[in-house]
Length: 253
Length: 167
Image (cartoon, rainbow over all chains, first blue to last red; front, side, top):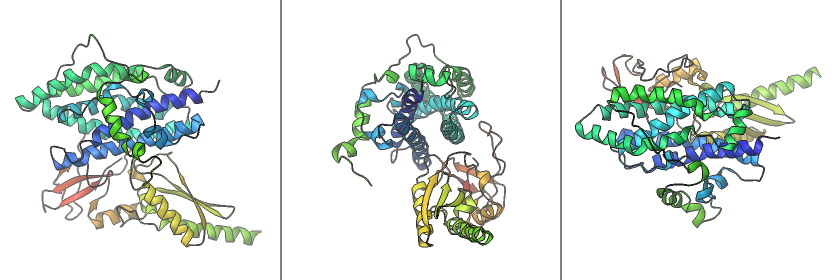
């Protein structure tokens, strides 16, 4: 049995994570608390978009229905997006945005590392080799901010704790595996997301220790994005993301 | 036969030279060959196929570079096709010695070599000022004017400068 259809779906979910987080980061453009951050967040957004483009394009080829990266990024309905809930959560304040970035990057780094080392698919390996170098910067950047804010003033530490309370409940979904992903894992194409929990914990614990933050207990983790069940803000995000293609169908630059 | 091979070889090296001379659109002091993002130019049935790799997945200059290479090859009389390759991934180690020197002369601190060792979390590197050579420099921002650069300032001569991030 060919793994192409399953791989296409698994890559689309992964691409959706990157597209949506990239879009959220781009919302900061022109609104960041300082000029350097106004550069850094669109820079990270570019990395995310670039990775999403590679994944969408390849997924479209595997699908064989003639869909290209733009069709996949701009012309699906909300239920067809399979990104995890974490990446679509609103930016909130700067502490929320940096923590969300750290949570995601701390997952993607070991994931891409494993894919670069072991994937049986040459293209996936190529994307992973590239992405793993970029994501290292994201962890460092977001991690430094989490520490600076957590170990900062009463105000900044309070905001950092609020961000942990608001976002930690969405982190479990990173390690969930869908049926499509499972097929790809068994075929040796993608690493098992569940295997990233240990390295993820290690990174988060290391940074939280320095930031005087505590990893909270999460009795009721939130998930659903991988099945297309999204949070309220997602529709608003899509309406902005898709505006140009929906208003002027087929427009190009 | 020998003569035909030689002519093909000449054409191939001419095609390479044409593509290699294309400047980077964002850092025009270096060519794409200096940066090491032009991987190969081969001639197949009279078509010059240039293989180009992105520096960053999301580098906005990728398309501009590919169009410039294609235009340069067409101008030189070749039929041209551009292929984007991802593997092996580009790292700053692909920048040639000459490329590093050109960057320095242009005011951009070149990346440290041997990027292959994984960058330690919060690892500090010493970046020398491209103007005065002092190693007393401070990082202003991890992200600079383009995705591939960070922003630094020299504590000795006070000149701000870009550092080509080590990938």
